[in-house]
Image 1: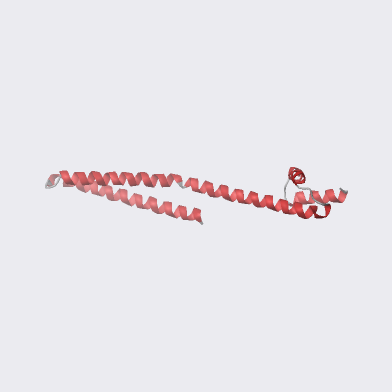
Image 2: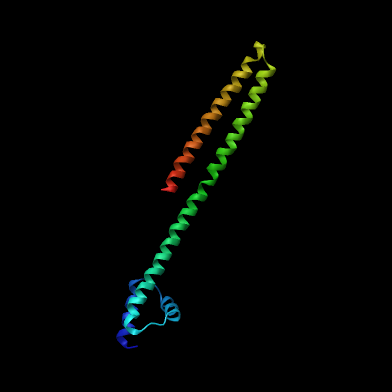
Length: 136
């Protein structure tokens, strides 16, 4: 190589912000003719940069999806609690039929179920909104 060739290589390395290890790796993997060297090296650098960008995008997407796990689990835990509260309410209704002194217990239980349902609905809506942000 001539001195001007070395200067061009250094300019390419600086332009693509890669270090000299990338150039040596490329030289080991490709045997090119001097006339196509700069073009081939530029394409190689662009491919490496594209792969790096794709990897960063994939990493960001996976991290965002991992953040959705906690609200997803919370939603299903709350749904199971609501189902249990409704089963308990149904049993209370069967046991307390015709007992006006126990109506207060039924009213309290029904109020609790309504509150749990409202909380569950909000958690579900928030999860869907967050999941839509990740998907777009």
